[in-house]
Image 1 (cartoon, one colour):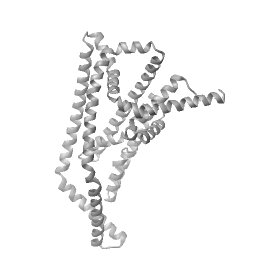
Image 2: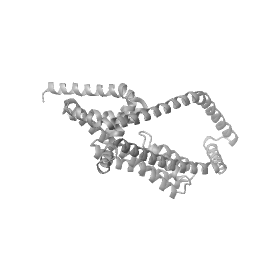
Image 3: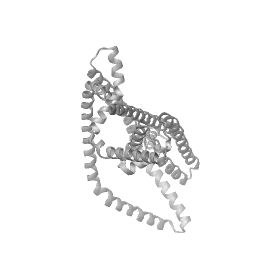
Image 4: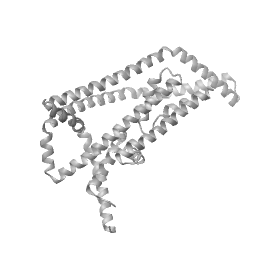
Length: 345
């Protein structure tokens, strides 16, 4: 390929990137309910068709039953996890006096250490720490409390918006279930329609594989943490395991945000063995994630884990918080279009 061909293909790729950015930034937010309905249809349609072939039941009824069963199982799982977490949280609150006494002892231990380091008496150290604590509380009152009401209203609006998206998405699902075959047939008769179907299949398979992989990794990391914390003697192993597993699924956060400060804190208390255990657990979780991401994400998607991380970072910079999902999705769409159009530099 000559320089002119390379330049032409480079311009095409830049055009694809710009088009995907425009669509993801400005068009997708307007059609989220319908995309949700389409995604729901594509995920459940194979099961609906399989059951329909064996049992002659109306597809709409099958769709309703499958969604109802899925939501029932999902709600049950969430309720069990929330109930377990609240039971352990209740136990934690019941032991608040013991915890306060323990951390008062830690406070005194730190004061004694600071006395030795700074060469001041205990009363001066107490006054200094009290002054810093009061300043921190004043800053929280000035910054946190005034914004609390406005943030609550924003959260309420977001919740109502999500309910609307869910309802419209479900209605879209049933309408598409009825007309899907006719729409697909019309698209297959058109050249561009065939390309859209091919690209959509690649993107859907990529999204499914990515979400499935992240779900598996999150469950495994949470289980490892719960089991390890249980054997370390923690009374709240399940609660902490769930929390660490959820944080680990978030890029740029991970298990270290809890385990590393926790390890440092217990080491300051003089419990080096437990601190090293927490650091060891952090390393095990990190290596486990790297190993599983390479096997589950890299192999199935054919995308290096590094590129997934880059797409998430760039997505967050461009789309905001939604970039955690929109970044990798944009990368998959751009890659699929380039492959479909066979554009090479």
